[in-house]
Length: 148
Ligand code: RB5
Image 1: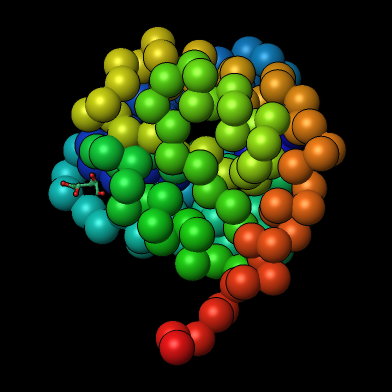
Image 2 (image 1 turned 180 degrees about the vertical axis):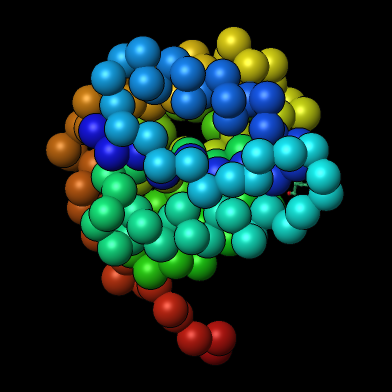
């Protein structure tokens, strides 16, 4: 699978651990940075990674910041993208089965590297349950909704 990955300064060590595991599993990984712990803005790295998924050059995306919150908010602004913010193996598994997110986000200040890697593996290996497609269609039907 072709997988985009990005992080901010808080997530570099976690990102490197995830990349190493994905490569060991035979995936192709495109790294959108950042690569140092110098302070940066998560959206500068997250948006290019997510846009590559939305555009089809990558099939999945992984985003890591301190909490995963900023990255996931930004990712869900990109048309067609469903980004799930996960905190444990349960949420990684359930979101794969119910929400079919193309993009996974998590917080490097919330989970350790081993759990981050395990959540990614769980998300990638859990099949989607087709009975949830109707709900996903309704998410996207509401995309770009105007205030009322
Ligand atoms: C950066 O300090 C921090 O705000 C960022 O990593 C993330 O937690 C934002 O949601």
